[in-house]
Length: 375
Image (cartoon, rainbow, N blue to C red):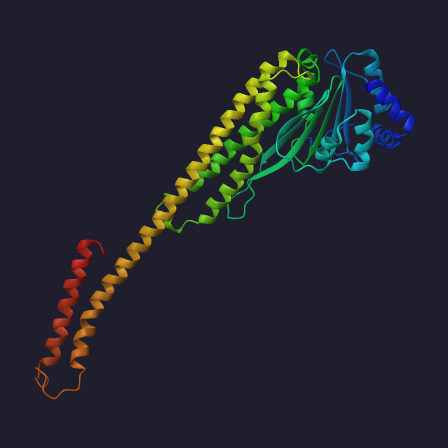
């Protein structure tokens, strides 16, 4: 069924009533992006709905259905619809209007997907994991370092639908940046897809640079004089947070490779070269994460070695003192036996001699252990 025919079907079935209500709600307030600095969120899941023609933003007239119908009749430009955590009811009319595949719709609503790229007929569906660095005064064993979210993107011949999950990763600044370059935006919906991918990957690099600061701090603490007493929980926490970052970054390699190399109808051939650049940036982020993982393993092993060395030193000190204490214990144990005939038992100077022998022996042992580094 054609897109125009699908639009007539939705209208005749009354399936866009709820969609029109959401659109009217969005028109009654300024259309803004959630989490954008100095802006407040809308009451519905519709963040923004904008039409672009030849890379230039056109004034909004009517609701979403009217906007889509005008774009398809003119066969010029495209619609960019932004959503934030929509419900099943809010997304149902949109899915019918744009003829979105039910499996992709389910993924977009439920979220918690791994990065991927799928094609459903003429529509491209991409999932990106967004990340942000959580600022903290001091890293502890329970500190949250990396926070993740998701951006799902539906790309068609004349539309882009972005579905965002999480309180970070706003596309408002990205939209404004794209609008400042009409030449790039005129290349169609695939230009928006590239801009989102580039924005997400740049955030990966920003987060890895911030995480490196935490790793450097832990490394400094471990190799300090009090390194053996450092909290190993911080190292494990960094490894857990790094694993969360790895789950967002690594699976994106294959989708970006497909976008950069394989011919896809929804992607402008001129845009594919830009995807190769994004793929290079992603490779850098992957290499940094792999290096961080290896470095944390080395730091953890070094910390465990320091603990082992410290324990060995403690055991040597305990052993040395036990050897010193063993001399008076042995002598006193011998003279504590109840025998009548023992050497020097009734000698007037016997007690002083025994104390002197014990003192000399203990002093000799102490100096010997100090010389060997045991004490």
